Each structure stands twice: as C-alpha cells, then as structure tokens.
Length: 273
Image (tube, rainbow, N blue to C red; front, side, top):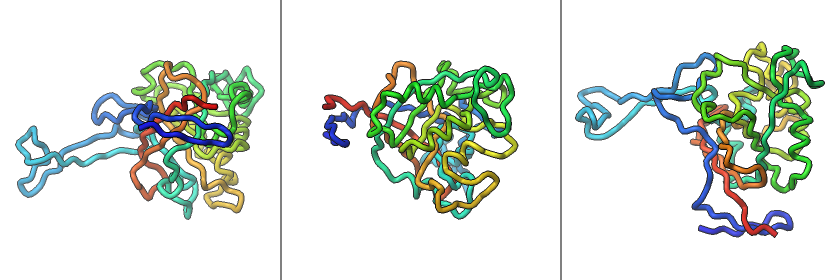
C-alpha cells in the first residue's frame, strides 16, 4: 500500500509494504546477544497431564513457554519506569504508529582523547559517543524528522547481533551527548548498543536520567521529567541502510512493564517536496 504523508510543509509517499527491519531476530537457544550476566532467552514445550505442546514429539499442537529478560536478550524498548516507580509502562508511552525519524552513524572516541565526561568518571580506554559527533551528523537534519533518533555506531559488523557483551568493552554516551539529545525534540531514541550507559556504572544510570530528566539517585518523577519518551536498545542497522530521514514503527506487545521486546521497522519517504 502506498501512503501519502504530509509533515510540516513536506509531502511524500511511503510504501508500507516495503519496510526495513532494524531489530535483532530472537532465536531461542541459538546465537543471540547477551548482556549483564543474563542467561540466554529460551523456549520449551509446555507439558502436563499427558499433553505435550510439541507436534514434533507427537503433540496435537505447539504450545511453548518463553523465558527471557527484555533488557538483556535482544532488541527492546523501555520507558522511564525502568528507573522510576509509579511511572507509566512502556505500553502506555509507546502509542505512535509511525514516527518521523532520522538515522545517523557515529564513531565512538577514546575517553582519554576527548573533552567530554561521564558519571562515574570514564576510564581512559572507555569509548564515548560524544556530543560533538552527534552535532556534526545532525547539523543539516530536518527537525520535522526528529521525533525519533536512530543511532548506528561503528564498527558495524554482523556479529553485533550475537555477542556476549559481558566479555568486551562496550561504547556508551558521554554526559554531554545525552544532554544534547535531551534538548532535541526526540521522543524515541534507538541505539544499537546494549545500553546508553556504561554497564558497570555502580547503578547510577546517569544517561538514562539525563534523557528522562530524573534527578540523580531519585526513583521519583518530577514535574519536569520526560515520561513521554522511550529508549530502544540492541537494534541492528545494516551498513546498506543510508543515513537520513525515515518513518519508524516500533512494535511491542502490550506489556504493563518497564520494558518489552520490540520489533523496529523503518520506511523510506519518497518523492518528498
């Protein structure tokens, strides 16, 4: 289906039958990303009272029990309830069907060679996604397409989809970078990293707090908190997908939870004028 859209003063068409997926397929008990010491996501047949939920084993139908940790086993989307109690669930926040989005690609920099910071203090060999790199990539963007910001980090090998991220140093955002994003009209941030924060940060989650505007150490929303925002982590954006404007669709089950597994599609706007 070809859909005609108007955004600000621009009119363009979108082929809704030709989306590009930028999420990681969840393969149970096979290669999959791992993070924060969590076990792999798994799936097993339901059994009981003579019933076997597996047709390959003689069952009448397939019925499977799934075990996973959304934050650690693959592409997921989270709300401010990740760091606050009495906060809206991800299903309550993520209500947009199509979101004007901009895709950019950045290279993380050694913390010891840049002038940006993080809390707790970064180690010299940490790699930071900096505000200066974001500003450089976004300097010519159309703000009408900044309801969502999609960030691809280099290097971008396919193995990103299957790594155990507990076994290697992972880039993360500087405080200045997240403060910069927080000042943009971004409501949905999508990254191809397991977290916007350093994994071993002592539980501070300082970048999550900057993005959602929650005070350091607090688990309470304030009048200025941005509870309308989401973060999606563990995306995978292939090299053949060009930087630029898109419409994004973030699909989740209606979990009343701080996070849910997500499937993310982008649609290329065509014939824009």
